[in-house]
Length: 386
Length: 112
Image (tube, rainbow over all chains, first blue to last red; front, side):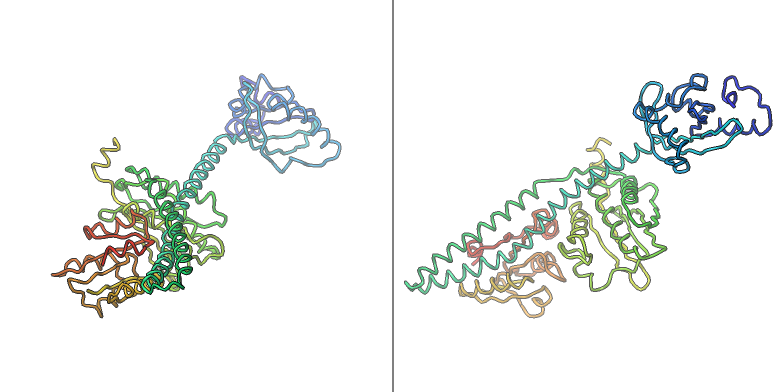
């Protein structure tokens, strides 16, 4: 068998041998055959690329040559163990291992191992798939998700700050005015018996003012942060958000994309827009979780001075009872979460001089959310150096 | 002169009402713009306090309409929202007096 991959390739002795050689050397994955003593019998072209050794260099050698040190020391033991006990730890299972290139670098490979009984004894066939590009893609997705989570958190904090400030201002206003009203009445009455009430009331008003000042400071802090907007190709931004969501999604839901050609650029902060899209997609997949044929449709369109992103699902729609408070902070129909997602999404869109509007659907139609964002003006395109 | 208060939050509306009555003014509160326009006939000397976040017709719309009157009353917008949100709502309305929440008697006494 050794001569199959020796160079120059000798003529195959039989048709089936010729066929096998062609298979081996056409395969994209690395293929290695070893004998019972771990000596390499077959080493195909893909392996040469993967490990940097030529077939001539490794044929007949122990397969340890392409393993990192920590594996290679244990490999003989693994083989002995299998031969003795017949207990399979990798054969027929496959797992992710590390390979070692001739230059010493290590890299992840997916290894599946098969076994064959031959007249020459037991042989093991390993198929090796390079995982580097997949790993890089996974890492990129992880980084993007981390960015998104971080920004979502910052933005959620801002939004929560603004929402809290607004919600607390209402009762605080009432408290302050009630107390000041009473204080005025007491002043007018001018009864010495009221002196103690007046002192306490003045202190209470002072405390309410203190609370008011804290809220004002919080509001100022939130207002200082202005997002970095620039002219952006929404299709790319939306597509990336869809990819991110698919990776993070537990349930299997179809996502169909239909992006408009020649969409004008939108003047937006891309990560914030992705936050809206991810949020809408998560809501939609939540609405579809009990359906077999759940599908989310994501599309982009130009609509006058706006570029719009439309996220639609084939779920049950939004119940009429949920509509009045749908975009209100701290109101939610879900068991988990704070009910900030849609409120944040809408205020992001509105802060971009756009809007987030909803068609609740129902009666067999799913909900449809429309994000409107302003088309970048020519000046904005020029300012951004585009 | 009369004070008209357009405010949907019951606490804010009630406390404002109490305060203005306390100051000896005729004051009426409305939970939304619709009920205000049904009953009130604002005149030049009146002061209309409009919360920007109203259910139904928005505070900004009400302000816009009031400004088109031949003899518009004094209009004061109140809001507890962020400045950017306020600016956005008022951008088509033009300049208007604004008091930000939380309100206090000092801020309001300048109105009367």
